[in-house]
Amino acid sequence: MDQPKEQTSKGHTRTRSAVKVNPNGGAPLASTNLTLSPQLQPPCLYGRIIHALTLSAATRPRSSTKGPLDVDDVPLTSPGPLSPQQAQRMALPTQPRSPGPTSPLPRSAAQSPVPRRPAPRPKDFSFLLRPENYHPLTPLNVPAAFRSDPSKQPTPETPIPDLLARGQFRAAAIAATNALTGPDAPAPSDHARIFSLLYTRLACLTLIDGTSIAAQEVKALEDLNSVVYVDEATGEHLVPWELRVLNVRLQALGFGDPRRAVMSYYDLAREARARLAAATAKHDNSARELWKDRLADVGVRVAGALVEMDDLTGAAHHLGSLPAREGGKLAMAKALLWLHLGDVGAARRCVKVEEAGETAGKVVDALCDMADGEYEAALARWGELKDESEDEMIGVNMAVCLLYVGRMQEGKALLEELVTAGRSSHTLLFNLTTMYELCTERARSLKVKLSERVAAMDESANGWEKSNADFKL
Image 1: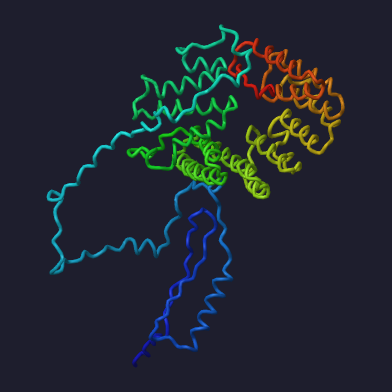
Image 2 (image 1 turned 45 degrees about the horizontal axis):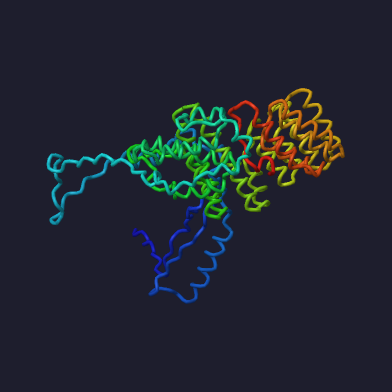
């Protein structure tokens, strides 16, 4: 008995719905491609087919995705086992095709030797050795008290590490420029030496209130994602991670494009995520922790960049999406960002006493009290912390609380005690000079005397030489 023949539909043809990968790292983009044969289109069915496919694509649930800043979905295991049908298909031998009359016969290996890959040419970074890339640093923005003592003035032969150890950041920045552009400049292919000196230059400029100068000089690097900065043999990036992170914010300032920082941070996060996955696959715990910390650090920096863009809503949403980490500097940084955004509850949740230590938890509680305007309660908390620790930050915040509760003379005296004890941070000096301006009309003479006291201190790696901006001169 003959079997009925299977009928073939000739009315129309269509392709399946496809999911396209979003190139920006977001959710997949659902798209439905429809192809109809123009010769065999039934006019009465065309509209129904389009309507049905449109409804199917519109009602399809959105797939859940994760961005480059997430850590918890790093691949840790190999793909699952194949099904029996897949294994059987893979086990079937493939029949070799017989050469046709027009296909050439296969050539032997001896007849077609594999060409050797030429050795990669050394990179040329001579464009970073040009003197016109760097600006001269004038000593006029340094108080006279720091320039009058000959025993503390460095010589041109002083090594850069010694200058950094003594807190001579302006002299270190000048020495780095001389090393890059002088007669003993490194070879154009010596990328390690060049990038080390450039990082010293830019970092020291940010420490001496020269961020605007650093933002102009960093333009010489141009795009760090270029192949110029990638080792062709190993695929490794030649620029140190610290310089790449510093470059992001400085270039955003230099080019006047704050959105550039967010995009660049996401590029760094994508690389850190890939390195984290590779270290996990190799069971390299030290590298895994390193890249995990770097990924978390970049996530916090993205929130800071959004705050600088005045996108407070986006910053709050981004901070809320970051995975919770144990206590430390990153937890404190997240708490401070939440305080900047005005969410005191989220700031308290970032640093818990059992995770970050008792001192860090009390510090966040005191800052939250200040943010809520509860200066008396905050003053009591700072007083307890001051009895437990001699940290300069605790004393400065306690002095600010004393100012807000109407006890400015006590706050000024507390800050002067910190200076006598050898403390001289920018925050301390700025707040003390502000109280001088509020207390008396002879504020300038008090500021000059304060600069002389700080200049008489011993040199230290925390920074000895100050600028006029530190004393509001």
